[in-house]
Amino acid sequence: MTSAFLSHLDNVLAEIDAAGLRKSERIITTPQDGHFTIRDAHGGRREMINMCSNNYLGLANDPQIIAAARQALGDFGFGMASVRFICGTQSLHRQLEERIAGWLGRDDAILFAAAFDANGGVFEPLMGPEDAIVSDALNHASIIDGIRLAKARRYRFANSDMTELEDQLKKARGDGARFVLIVTDGVFSMDGYTAKLQEICHLAERYDALVMVDDAHAHGHLGARGGGTPALTGVGNRVQIVTGTLGKTLGGGMGGFIAGPQPIIDLLRQRARPYLFSNALAPALAAGSLKAIDIAETADDRRAHLGELVGRFRSGMTAAGFELLPGETPIVPIMLNDARRAQGMAAALDRRGVYVAGFFYPVVPQGQARIRVQLSAALSEKDVDTALGAFAEAGREIGVR
Ligand SMILES: *Cc1c(COP(=O)(O)O)cnc(C)c1O
Image (cartoon, rainbow, N blue to C red; front, side):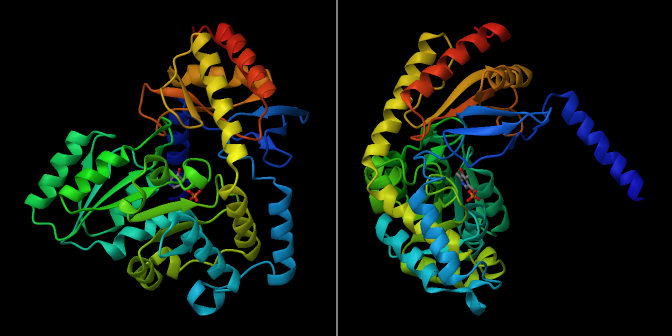
């Protein structure tokens, strides 16, 4: 039995290899930053320019954040060894929740071990079988999974297609839904553009629906004070529920949150399963994240630098003849379409000291393989120019232009 099962798995893995879809992990031996060192296959070390982290403001290795986390290790210990409601809530946890809520202009916030858990736990307690969830087809996997766990009726619209969204809202209303929730990513992370929140909120109001936005790829670096896509697009609290992560711009540690109206947060504290049945955030993570929010909120200088790098990279790549998806976020997809070409390109860049990742099925649709570059305020203009030179050379080597 066991050997039949394991050889079945070996066959599945062989299929993944044969299709050129195997994801391999390179080993990094220094902190997450604009540059880091990797260990190559022969045990050597090489310094790389890092062009693919979610470290948008360059806070992952910030000395003030490290100091705050160290202080918390001393003051609050290493681990909580409890869920929140038994004996896992320290003053730090409430301080962080209140800080997030204040920063985003919300009544309250609730922490999770990850944004994946926040999305996994948010729908089931809030939306019952009489209710409808209307979801963008390109939403993050954690939203898709979270919706699967809810008993609500499910409606889906093509990515950012407002005509389809309206059709689905009509359908949900026609089906007699009690409450309707529209859910979207704030930034579509494989493509790098933002949700049409003005139009979404307008339709939500017309059809009496709530709006939830997952701003994992926006909090901290997009919008005034890093307030994310509701701040960027001016819709503010016309979006009622927001998901965020502490694992990207905000220090890149780990943890997730939901922020919104008090009754929503209160009910999630009673009923959200990943909150009730999973460990409280480690104190050092909570303290480091608090410091990260302090820094991000006032980091207009970092946001401006990041914006300059994005413009520099986009115009350089376009001039070099690469096919980019349009957008205004630090995510820049370079379309190669074929998975093997994307992997070949990533390898050719790796040999030139530029660390990027190829993305292909099942992370993006078949035939839409790409290199996704993410700019970071940890990079300099010189780094971007070096990367542009490497892309031009690698493109010639692989024959993509
Ligand atoms: C990264 C991401 C998540 C998951 O965040 P974690 O805190 O790492 O679990 C959820 N939603 C979106 C849109 C993301 O980009």
